[in-house]
Each structure stands twice: as C-alpha cells, then as structure tokens.
Length: 210
Image 1 (cartoon, rainbow, N blue to C red):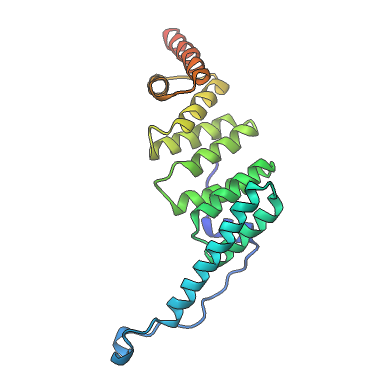
Image 2 (spheres, rainbow, N blue to C red):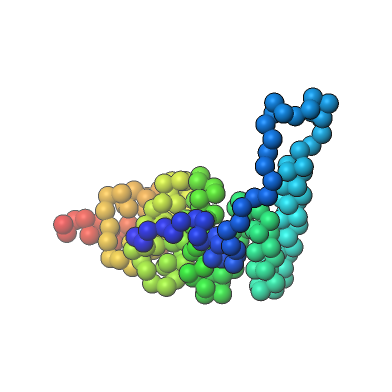
C-alpha cells in the first residue's frame, strides 16, 4: 500500500494555503489581572468567531451539494476549511464530491486528512478504498477496507468493499471467510446477501484446493 502523505502537506495542497505563523502570543496566567478573569481572551474569542464562520460555510456547502452545484459546494468547503482545518465532515464531504468528479487523487488526500482527524470513524477509510476500487487498484482498496474494519469490524459498507476487492484479486483466506459470514448475518439487502453467498462458495472452494 502507498505510504500516506503527511496531513499538513495534503491540507495545504487541497486548500492552496501557505504556512503562516499565528499572530499574537498567549500571556501566562500569572500575568493576568485578577479583575479581568471573567473576560474572554481575545485570541479565544477570535477562534470562536472563526469556527462559527467555518460552520456557516460548511452548511452552505452541504446545501449546494444537495442542489447539485458541485463547484460552488467545493469552494464553500474550502472556505470553511481555511477557517477551521479540523472540520472533519468538511474534509470527508469534499472528498466525496471530488471522487464523484473523478478527481481521485485529491479525493484520497481529503479522506486521509479526515481519517487523521477522527481516528475512530471508518467512513473516510472506506471512502479511500472506494476511490482506489474505482480506478482498479484492488490491492490498495482491500488494504483501505481492512483499515476501516479495524475501526469498526461490523461496518457493512467496508465489508462489502473488502469482499468485492478480494474477488477482484482472486484471493481468499479464513479471515475473509469469517467476514463474509458476518456480512451475511447483518446484510439486509437481498442482492448483497446473494452476492455474499456466491463469495462464500468461492472462498471455501479456494481453501479446499490449497
């Protein structure tokens, strides 16, 4: 699997940002005037305003995306992230839009950043696998789906992706067979359940012939 690009570099590339140093410095608590303890630190207030503005851009971007206005939505997501680059949902949603536009490189970069911000959420890793799968990189897709399932072993979309990638690779093992069984138990879509039955037969036959 390809080595992940450092998050900071990905963020600057996607947003077109340059590295800047924060203005101002925080004074020590010992130097604060006791009469001003109830006042909000200007730096904190500024950051709160930035986050609020970022949320407004994010919500506008989401509305635009639902209306099918992809370019406008992407710009609003970028506007949001310039104000708050820790806004996980903006990275993930922007990646999905980029993937739908077949801009797979930038989509994967956005998903990698989202995965770093929310280390327990399987969705950005699943989305990464989906992007790899769409360009025919089955081995990279398989690894991404495995990583998604490491975060949530019962995440059905990642189970589907992993099983499909294994079929593309023509591989199978005991661990995959167990995932197929778990997917059969949890899947509600009958077409997917039929597919899992077929893949269970394929993997069992593969194991029997070893």
